[in-house]
Length: 277
Length: 301
Image 1: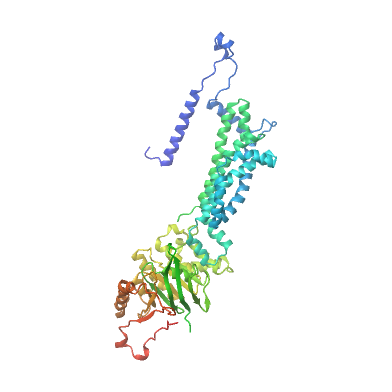
Image 2: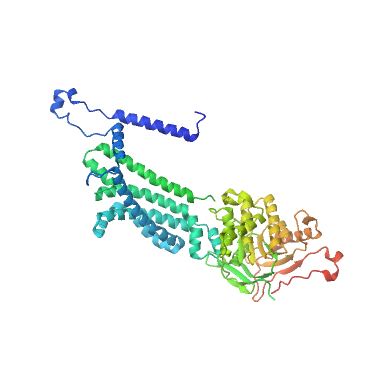
């Protein structure tokens, strides 16, 4: 063991935990008895019919294999491949998210530049921020009138706050020395914003963007359960209605996997703009 | 005839937090000639940095004016380069890019190659060459960072270079080497320099003239001491010059005793508060014939 690096030892431990966890899970699921093993009484009380139950991992793997080998099939409104469902969700998340970023980042910049604006907007932000994004759904459905656009609006409204607050905070916290460097070099306000303040605040802004994408991915599942039609959230709910728990477990894992990928993407971006002082 | 840089009746007051006003300094008036290296010495709290910020255009005085080359100083400008005590390099840019940042601001019409060549040249003048200039400031020592900052300032050829305790955060040995680098680059560029320090030896080594400030509040520039030691100077030989300890003793006396005794005397209306010129020259009487005596620099306004 002494020759392995820290990362290697951690990876080994992870694999071990995975295997043990899966084994416990597999062992914990009671096997349904075959019909011929049942007693007369059991058969009479209907125990022989298939029962819905939490699937063992082996079944989930089989499901995953089946789904992932053909992720983009489309056999009607209630039977689409996992790839199509996830694509719908990602499309909604990115639409709402990009819209939010386009507003939150420039607006956060302005708020961060002016102490008056910061203080004036703060109460509104603090009031609106803790509202569960789904609480906006009825209002959005009524005003927008389109369920697709309403889902995007909900994503928009939930991802705007962390980006707005972090941008304003990052911009307001830019060291005065750096701003003075810009001033003594006669940079105009736009050049100062782009050449000095933006890179200086970029790590904080990206932290906000990373929090936002995480929240957006959490919210899309719930939003799609409400709105229905397509998307990974709808898929989970639909499989629950079908009592197909294997698919439910599989889609839960897929939600986690996509969320992890989105977060890793922003983590990578964040590392690129981070600087040491 | 006004000096190149003329500080006229400069007064700075801040609210003291109890509804009153705190006068940091009052009616400060002095001049700096073109190509001159002037150092301002004084205890902390006497408003040296405030004067520096006003000269840089980063702060506005309560009263008075700064006139440079016939024009009043209003706001920051590329004509007045600043080297800050904490280096103020942009940490996300490499060393080279930090200097290029300044050069680009000065010469927006230059090509990237011109900008880069100019920046590289000035980095080499402070002894930074090769791979070092591709490093980020966080990967440099404090001394190296300050060299970058000095190179950035000199590369822009400002009319006036302001150094705000540039070596304050450095250890004594590093400080010595960078003082040498500063003297070298200054002698090559004939830059007008105004510098703050509280290191007496550093002031004597670098300056043509030392301005002495009394303690604050209501500080004033009390004396202007000429450094009558010929250039080029270096730190080892300078101490053997007969004037060195005479000047040094005078400065120590001032900072130790008189800066306190003279402090807090409010000036009468109309008084300009120009510093008294002090010239200490032990070599003058014995060696120099009368006609070769260096004349006093006019500092009265």
